[in-house]
Image (tube, rainbow, N blue to C red):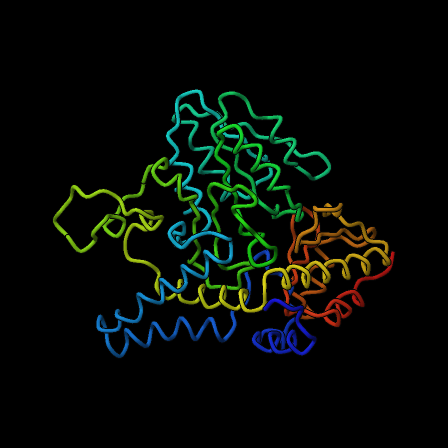
Length: 382
């Protein structure tokens, strides 16, 4: 959809989320609710195996290809650059273990990354790779701070496009350009970005991207994807070889095959067909709405909530300068302890998160200003 959606469009898409009839759900940075179209996409695969067993594969496997094309469109990639994974960690492991490290190399990353984008890199220290952690200032680890931490031995930089704890949105394009000019790999953890904000891996010069589908992408748990820039496929070792990742998976006893020519070389074996189908259905809805429209909608909602919180004397702990905003908005009340306020809101069927001593909003496109007002009315003025 190229035009801006009308109010009736948002109402129609809101109707796809039954949870909105019982809860004010603004916790998509944690785990998102499912919609009937996603559940039906998964159920269709289950019914196929229920009714036909292996004979359903002639239409199940093409569904994987459709989902791969949708994921590629979402991030501005080619289908051959997308591998389906179980989760974000799975993708990070593919990148971290696939780079051909030399003893003494280093990887640069923020010290405040979510553990999924930390442990796989820190584990490289056993192989003689140094991890250079960059400490935040005022809640931010900026692209410039990561650039300054790079040395002649930096082989990779990894960072979340949006930080889980406070919603800081990094200047990925600037960081990607810096890395590309110096031959440094740039890996992005996109789980707090995709589904809320636009992403173009080419414009951002991202080499590798990892994400899961159960947060902003509104998909099922246990399904995600990994992007590898096409001309880097042969530079990234397949550390997780499996029977589906070779040139001809059906030539069972030919153990001397090379890897597939595309990113599906990283898909070891039996795939989560149910999850991939559900994730594909959700991504297709984002493409129908338009990622730019979704981003504008979410940022408008966070701006609306920001104003309401500020009017009540609350302190916003999320970075909110130009270019820093995301779908995450955190705040602290000057008089009421965050944990107590969080529990009070939960008793009113308002679902948010507690992170780092702050209450975290993460609304999606189907949420409304009226829901925001309902929450704000329960927050006492300072």
